[in-house]
Image 1: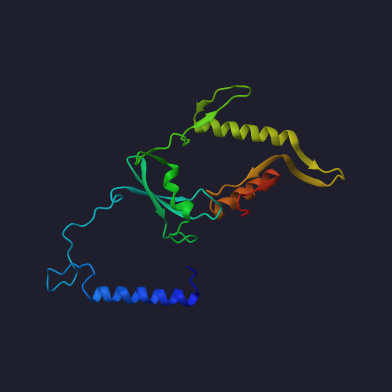
Image 2 (image 1 turned 120 degrees about the vertical axis):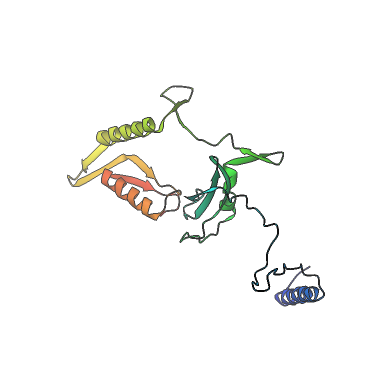
Length: 209
């Protein structure tokens, strides 16, 4: 059935009228009544316990795109038990898109209705040596030191001080830098300054920030 704008408004008004009549006829749920006449606040006998009431709140940035929406991760016993939008975040103000709302599923998968940790989620640094077929586990200090050493070696080998016309260039075309959606504007600003200081001209970001 085609619904025009006028029919939609008619149906909306009819639905509102039906709801009002149902409430007048006593179909609305009963509201708790105050037990103390001096205190008008209703007293609920069995308050609902929140699943996250004993969890620690960790503030994070959504990893799906470059908008940088804020996410609250609730952590209990070292495991994420829930995620939601951060109402104090200046960009998203507590809202999340469909992908951000499903951020919890990056950590867990569902088997027979039960949430279990995603076995494909990377939690440690894996390194594969040149011409090797197997990955080996290394610590973060080793990984960062190795990345820094190789970056400096490539920059020193391919750094261009002057171009073909003898003009000062001070650039390195053998390296490229891609930004991260996990970073906010301030962090990306620092990364961009760092890249410029190294002379890297091939830099980009998934959202062109």
